[in-house]
Image (tube, rainbow over all chains, first blue to last red):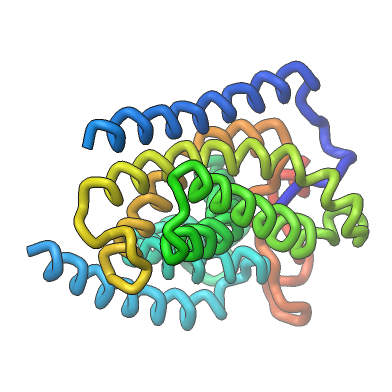
Length: 40
Length: 234
């Protein structure tokens, strides 16, 4: 569900930062899994 | 105790899915979001039905466009669309990996690849290609970034819940047992909550569309407001 190209888009830098943040969130999930599942 | 909770959960889920599947037919929403809400209710049971009533169901005839205008409902639509599409691939990946007894890293990788692949190519690009002028290839290019951001957050939230619970709850690693699907439901719910703020950013910056109002041509409400959303109001 994506907007068409004519709408005002965020700057590429902001999008890159958000992409980085999303990767960090994913990494945090993996790290939590490794820590707590590893303790078992 | 736990088996009683799970039984209650599946009874409530069956009732919720029946309600949403019937009721949403009269809701003036886009077909893809109608399917998304039904799937979300399959995944999350009464929570999905609650979100449908609170976020999408038309409160009074002719009021849907105004009802879904609020930002949080727009973002809810965007998040539901992501979770519904990605969820199919993630659940398929989890079931396949658990059945084959794959290691945890391969398990997560398979879920990610199938979830991203299905969500991006089918739910985003194929179903919403009209927003890219009808071109599937252009839709693939336009939907990659929003799908990537949303999928990472969704997986970040759900993978920890899924892995930790499957490690600590006996029998939960087998798709043949109800506890597996119950824990996957909870994990998808948590993943959706984590993905919501990311979808907020995407909707605010016009990278993703939110909830829409799509009425059948010929109805009284359709005249003048066939398809509305944040973009249409600009």
